[in-house]
Every structure is written in structure tokens, then in C-alpha cells.
Image (cartoon, rainbow, N blue to C red; front, side):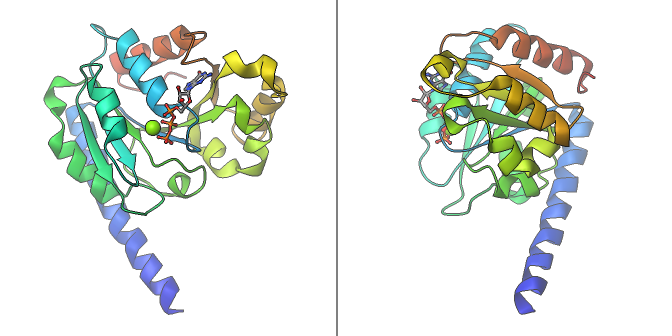
Length: 221
Ligand SMILES: Nc1nc2c(ncn2[C@@H]2O[C@H](COP(=O)(O)OP(=O)(O)OP(=O)(O)O)[C@@H](O)[C@H]2O)c(=O)[nH]1
Ligand SMILES: [Mg+2]
């Protein structure tokens, strides 16, 4: 019983920060995309390649969430984009309060779009509102095409599903049609982009979608 009350208080406090983040982002007209996946699916690689591809068109800043280290923030800064690293020190997801802190560290007035790279985990980050504009799910082909069926929460909430590492399709048994059909069963509006951050295959369609969103400041239908 006590545990339930404490969890409720934590969620209420998170919601307050999430609402403040939403108000802040709306006032600044800044879209903010919360990227969620298993560890190692390719989130940081996708973000670094996306920043490079959109240079001169969309100014991107990144909030990097990890349990420990600033490895990912350093990878992002190498592209020239600003990045704020948040270490959750063991927690399996970012909180809205941590995102609020990072939003005030980033040079938001010089940006068109913010990415949040959440802690690698398909489950916990999907439940928490950070005040983001939309959630982006990344599923990499070595993880298996059954993940949308087995971990539906994030795929149900994502505006976009990136199926990454399609350069490895021939080495495994991942079926893109099956994974896509399972996503559509729980989320008819999801946009699915099969990509390889490594080879660049499929990345232009994803980047075009982002450019359109950053220009209109809303999620394209
Ligand atoms: N073959 C292949 N490898 C990739 C691709 N994208 C990323 N990788 C590799 O996958 C590994 C993990 O990539 P990251 O970008 O660090 O993944 P991440 O999701 O940010 O990892 P965490 O932040 O630790 O959860 C690295 O060795 C990347 O080089 C891809 O499209 N194809
Ligand atoms: Mg990463």
C-alpha cells in the first residue's frame, strides 16, 4: 500500500515537470522527440548521422540519457551539435525533471529541433511523460521481429518506428513486413522507416520527415 502511494507521488511530480517542459517547448516553438529503444539498437549512431545529414537545414540539440558516462554526448558533440548528458545513476529512464534541467542547459534559442536519447530500455521509458512532442521507437533487426508484439507499449505510443540495421537483414531472419504489421495492429498512425545508420540506406526518407516537421513545427500526418 505504502509503495503505491509513493509511486503515485513520484508520477504526479513527474507530470508537473512534464507539463512545464511542454509549455516551455510550445512557447519556444521547438519540437522535441524522445527516442526509445533497447540498448545498442543504434540510437546515438542514428542521431549523429541525422545531424550530419541535416546540417545547414535543421539545427539540432540533443539531451543524452545514460545510466553512466558521457560517451554518447561526446559522440554527438563531435558532429558540432550541442549535447547535454544526464546520468540517471541506475534509473532505467529519464525523468521530466532531468529533461527540464537539460532544456535550460541547451542553447534552445539557436535550435530548430531537440532529440532526447532515453536510457536503453524498451519498457520503462515508454510509460513516462517527459513533455516531449512525440516518441520515436528504434528497433534493430538483430533484436528480432517479434519485439512489437512482445513489448507493445512503446510501439503503441510512437509516432515513428525506425527499423535500424537493415544492412544486417541477410545475416538474420528479421521479417520487416511482419514487424510492420504487428506495429500497425497496435498503432495505425505509426510511420515506419527501415534504415541503416551504418550505410545510410533509408535515412533520406527519415530526414525528409524531420525536415518537414521542423519547418511546420508539427508531426506530419
Ligand atoms: N551494422 C550496423 N551496425 C549499426 C547500425 N547502427 C548502429 N550500429 C552499431 O551498433 C552499435 C550500437 O550503436 P549505438 O548507436 O551506440 O546504439 P545506442 O542505441 O545508442 O546504444 P545505447 O545508448 O548504449 O543504448 C555500434 O557498434 C554501432 O556502430 C547499423 O545501421 N548497422
Ligand atoms: Mg546511445
